[in-house]
Image (cartoon, rainbow, N blue to C red; front, side):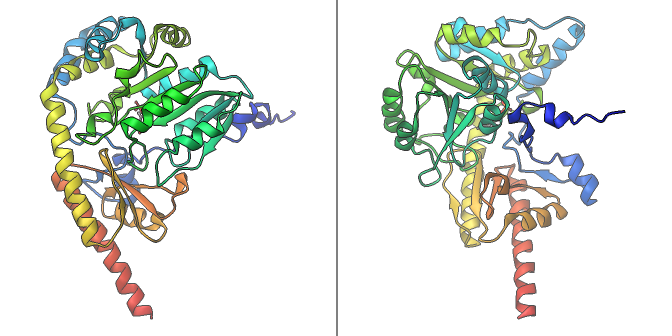
Length: 377
Ligand SMILES: *Cc1c(COP(=O)(O)O)cnc(C)c1O
């Protein structure tokens, strides 16, 4: 029998694709490292979990699992339209915001077209480009954040979509309102600009815009939002895009019919109503961030100031071995080698006791290393 090389049959972009590498799940680390009660500070989830009203809403939805979900997500869209002061026809629901980010490319980007994004921004953008066989134009950063002027200069006639995450993952940096406004003004209107606002709820009084307020000013603007971070619903996979109605209509055409399941719809709807849970989560994050910054200062480790629920810091040595040593102590973080930031580690702000456990483990790992260095001199 002839053996067929299926890799060669795959589209060119997919042949070279390396799948997205998520943070390690707790159960996997416990299994592989023989540790118990591991804590995960690797994926920027809400360590408090979702609002209790979310759990109640899911329970109330359970008896109806045999029915298809509402394919239009009417109830959730109604609350979202109210929250953002937009029409329901401006909303596209996704199986996580990752899915709506991909819809945008599915609608607007053909093979040989170009997608633009910054170096050191969210890993999904490059995967999306590869899957469409599109060209990636990766624009060098400026101090760990988007260099908006460089992006403008690099736009070509082939550029269809620009992805800008603000605040930026994995660095935590943000763009000022003025800079982003001027950028949006300068981008040609036939280029779609996606502002991915996965962490926008955490920014507090930092000067960075909620771009959903600018939808009327820029018809080519698409906002991506998620329930995976501050709302604590990462496992349910629900996010959405806000855009002008024509773009939303196109995005909805490429959606699978029931892409958001009924438990996710009910949970997101309930989550939006619990403003207190959100505010408490943001406040706990603010305090945890302060704690982590102070402790990294004590350890003489430089970090990138962050507007989010994670902190990226410089270990001044490859982060991978430190990441593994931390896992042996039951603490899961994110080494940034896959982002070409070999010496950097990203840690999510956890519960107060988790932050302490992380600092304790990191201190132990680094001082054990120093002892080895001293004894081998
Ligand atoms: C976490 C994250 C998302 C959200 O992903 P979901 O698919 O909604 O879970 C989107 N963009 C960025 C930059 C993120 O960090």
